[in-house]
Image (cartoon, rainbow, N blue to C red; front, side, top):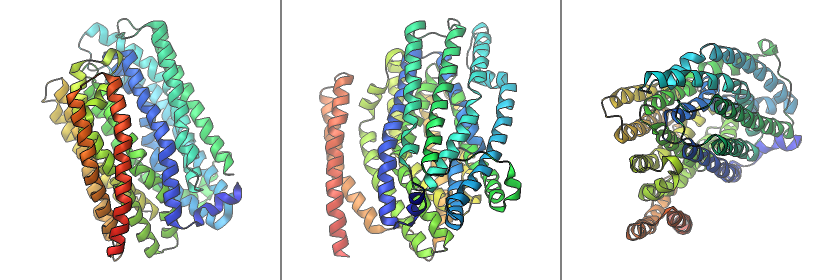
Length: 536
């Protein structure tokens, strides 16, 4: 296992990126599907209530706070450093560096846990601000405060989790890192279902017992703990599991990584803060958090199994080329990654845009199955179809910049996106507290992704010169395959209009039609790539 951890980075990028992209996409599909199911089940059990708004927002607070510290950005900063450390000193050098970075991160995370507990009433106040009745708002404040106290320790668990994921990715191992979230999602789904069975469904703050809050809070923390344990097991398998060390001050490489991590806090902090603002505004509409959070989850689920899978798989190769100052290999790896990103995202864009209505009909279940929510959710999913392509291009662009140890432009991109979100959120207050406000909030997410992607790609284009920025043949082939896909997706839409059946009919249509559509896309893409390649 140790030897493979070192040599995993020596494979040709053309084979490594493809294989690892498929691995991330496959396991990511399972974990993201269960994550989407978690949101759907939670909404179905808790219903369109203010308590559901508070729980669904509160549940993600530790993850958002951890993102403020490091989160996914940790991989972008740590993986290039680990690649260099393993290349210079073998697995022992990588283990030493990882232990010192982990020690620093756990110290910071522990301090943040204490601060979150101290300010838990303030966080709870923001979660219950939209409750109109003063008495209900006061009880909601108490319940939300208790929830925040129960989930605050998850910050330490998430910190360990992200370090372990980065360690595995640095060694070219992606399966467990991508698939382990399934366990967390399944466990929380079971907790929510059992809680709904025992305490009842659709309870609002005035009827919610304290025991229910304790069960949900403790159950979610247990689920995160199990997920973290699995990621640490994955780190042990690649030979990098080590004790945290506070000797980072004596290690120049560890200090350099920590400095880049501190400088890069804004890369993750601004999007997390922006998402919290959007969820807080969505909580002013009963069931609104479900719509916005589900749209956000769908966005990153689709991106994770397509474009983001490519970006994560390409990062070690990009880092290796940047470390060797091999501009030609870096450029070719970037063009390959960008081509794969566009190729993987285009069919999802067409399918979801044309079939957003049956998708919304399937996702709205239980207490949340109301026309007032299904209609806005349908429009939001159409917006998500475009946003997942933009997000994928943005993600692989910032991965490429981090591979070159450039954290300034990704940070600026996040700041620009946050500014767009703040302006859009302020404008949302001018809309009525109904579905139109929820649709606007999801449009704001797309606007932020566009602004961030434009900032990153502009800089990356300047960095890659004189190497080519884009592989036109691959993009043309993807567009040709997408045009072939459109009639199949349109036929699925037409069939649905003729017979708007129940959710089972919609699920069958999406499953069967999706397989046929993607099969047509893959076949035409293969033929187009060959013919365009032969013509040139």
